[in-house]
Structure formats: structure tokens, C-alpha cells
Length: 110
Length: 114
Image (tube, rainbow over all chains, first blue to last red; front, side, top):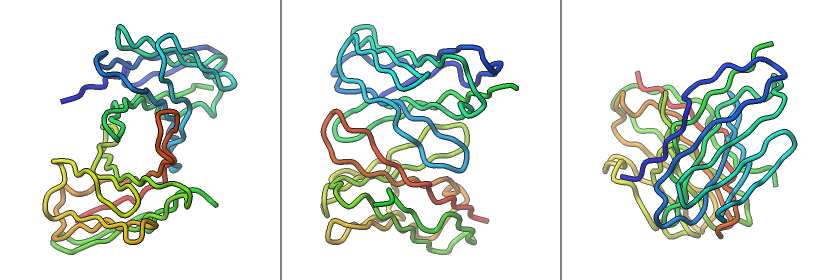
């Protein structure tokens, strides 16, 4: 069974503060790691697809890093805004599909 | 192209009834995936198609579940003799394939079995 672990499960952050959370995965046979943002009543939205060890990707105030040798990825959000409230999912590519973690539920407090 | 469409958005059914969901992927995408998400869990893989061929089915998918993608365009997921444990969000996604491509998801079909 392939385990993709995300922590924390849930997080409350004050508006304007920065935050980060973790995705851990088996380091063997790595192909790609995906990050998605899933807002309530909407579709999961792809944020990043990362394939190389040491990759760093950025999209506005959100960025991600990847360490394939030790099997983890961090997602950072700088200066949290109310619209950042969502579930953030990471997913590991395995064979021809992606396997998701349980997600980190982020709540931004006004 | 307006993205991945799923129909219906919500479905309430009585235990024992059959239900069918539809997914219309992005037209250029040859890969189509079905996932199921229950409370507190991440989306779980159910099955996927490359064009019209169903290439993998999860062991989670009992013989009450069947999926099709005739002509490699839209797909349907049918659940026969529904059980309360089938209550979940059913997500469809499509992809152009390749390592650098993310998946484009639909908004899902929320199934409630009463």
C-alpha cells in the first residue's frame, strides 16, 4: 500500500500570517508529485506538478519545494488571505495514476 | 472548452437502486479518471481510461461498479444495487498524459444513499 502522508490535518492561520505544511511519500520509484487546492463546492485545482529533486515552484503567494531523496514536499503560503481557505491535497504519481494524501484543511481567520 | 463537466451535481437514491453518473472531459485529453472521496479522506482512485480502453480498476471497485468510455469521449460510472457505504463524492478528472501535466477535475457528483 502506497502511503502519502500530509500534516497537519487541519490548520488555523490568522489573516496576513504565513504558513506551510508537509507532504511525505516513499522516496523509491519517484516520478512526480502534484499539489491541488480544493475549495468548498468547487473542483480541485492543480497548483503544481513537480518532477525533479530540488524543484521549487511558485504561483503568486504560494510556493512549493520538493526533496525526492528524503521523500517530502513543503507547500508555503505567504501572507494568508481569506481566499486561501481550502483543502490542500498532495498526490504522488504511481504507474498511470496519482495517489492522494488526506489533505490539509486550511482555515484563514479574519 | 469549459473544462470537465459532471452530471448530476447531487444524487439522492434509495438503497438497492441503480445510479449512473456522467463525465465530459476536456476534448483534447485522452486520459480520464474516476476517484471517490469520503469524509476525512483524500480522493481514492477507482479506475481510468486511455481513449476508450479501461486500463486499470482499483480493488476498491466491487462488481457492482462499472465504468465505460465509448468512443473515447464522455464516460459513465454506474453503481448497481447501491449501499449506504457508496455515499461519497465521485470525482472525474482528465489529463493529456505525460509527467508534467496536472489533472483537470470536475466539480464532482455527491451521492447520498438513504
